Image (cartoon, rainbow, N blue to C red):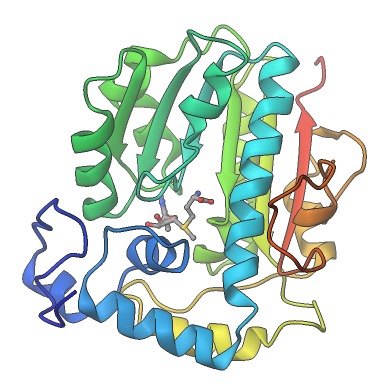
Length: 280
Ligand SMILES: C[S@@+](CC[C@H](N)C(=O)[O-])C[C@H]1O[C@@H](n2cnc3c(N)ncnc32)[C@H](O)[C@@H]1O
């Protein structure tokens, strides 16, 4: 694994713009932290700095992925067969369509991310999967996202949709905008649709969120904005939250530990919730 920023650790060449080569991206650093293969030297450098500053960052991102798996499985079992995955990141193990299709074999998924590399890798890896699309979009623009042909191709907005926002809303600095954007999507979805959210916590005493926030200022779109449980409750207020409510990700319907699972207690970092759009 060379330290030339153009050298990805995967076999897939990264076609980065000059700006992207200079600065780490959230999608690629997250991929590095998850042990993926789609990142450059600049991303690995920031990833290592994050781990040095707060070693819990690795269990935090793993628990978020694990929450994604449990939440999507739950929603598929509840009858949701189409998903809009906003801020979907670089495809890795256990992507939304793979998880959903274990329950609903023909589940459809529209992945949307603002990061060109995440979209490019998504297209390369998932582009030929029937019923799955990957497109570039800014989740803060619901009109544009929902009008994107790639989204319209796979989602029928006349039927319930699972709206997924995993570890992405901390990239929206303005709390009122984050709340309003979620409310805007929910208003366009039919009753019976669902929302699953995880969000980096700003008030978890176990985590040095100050360090994570400081280091994340290297991202081109600026530092992340972790939020308190109260702030997140306001963001998900438009849905009827299912048990166990708004909790730390590891506490959301945990599965029994299996032989071979990594040691260690459930950790921390993201708060998470799942709920359904009520009848109007
Ligand atoms: C920490 S990663 C989470 C990836 C995936 N959702 C997961 O939980 O495994 C955050 C992702 O959100 C994307 N993102 C950040 N701001 C966004 C925005 N305004 N619209 C769409 N995607 C965004 C980043 O590019 C990145 O891929």
